[in-house]
Structures are given as C-alpha cells and as structure tokens.
Image 1: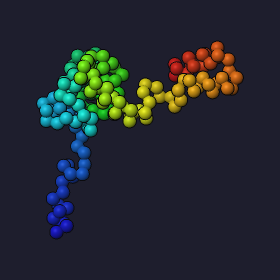
Image 2: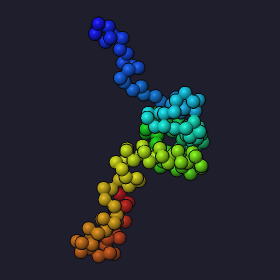
Image 3: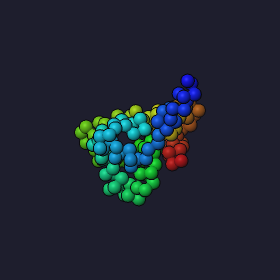
Image 4: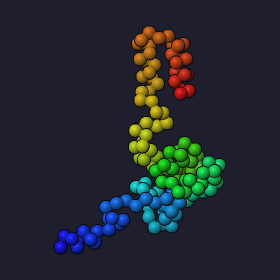
Length: 147
C-alpha cells in the first residue's frame, strides 16, 4: 500500500517548487492565469508595465535576453534601482511600493539602498566620542561614501 503511494508521488508537481522564467511568469500574470510569480503577488497591469519596461528602457533592451530567462526575484532589485517606480502612478505605484516593501526588504536584510550596518548619524556620534573634529569627520564620511 505504501509503495503505491510512493510511486504515485510526482516530484515535479508535489513538494517541489517549479522555477519559471520572468518572461513566462509575466505572461501568465498578464493573461490572468495566476497572480503570483515566485511568491510575489502582482496585478496584471503591473506585470504589463514590467514587460513594457523590459521592451522600452535602455537597460531592459540591452539585457532583455538575460532578464527574460532569469528569475523574478533577481529582477526586483534591478527594477528598483533603475527607477521603475517613476513610470507608475495611482494603483500601480501603490502595488509596486508594497512589492518593494515586502520583498526587497527581505533580500536586503531590512535596509534600503545602503549596505552599511550603522546609520551615518551613529558613525558621526562614535567619531565625535573618539575626539575627531567635525572637519575630519566630513572628510572621513566622504571617503566612506565613495567606497
């Protein structure tokens, strides 16, 4: 009896996530077949906007082949850094902001944009406690920001 259950188990459809390309995932969401790509909930209009960004933006046109074959999770930071939100308004913008807040925060360890562990204010206070002059702190911060 147990052997029959094991033989009926299909690893492709049960217990394992299927990877899907960005291109196919966006098509599925745009056509209304699903509302998620790799756990990221999207509306059909937002999926269409992402497809248009890939077709129209300089970055999207240059790397379209790689983007379309890649995973959706790796596209989110690229979209965010390339100013994808500037193209959106209204409900699409709110949907994009919720996607960024939920999914980019997880991948970036809870920090946006800056990979430093401490805020610049904390760094400044620590340097002031050590007796560094404000002029030298400014120089030091400018060097750190260039790194």
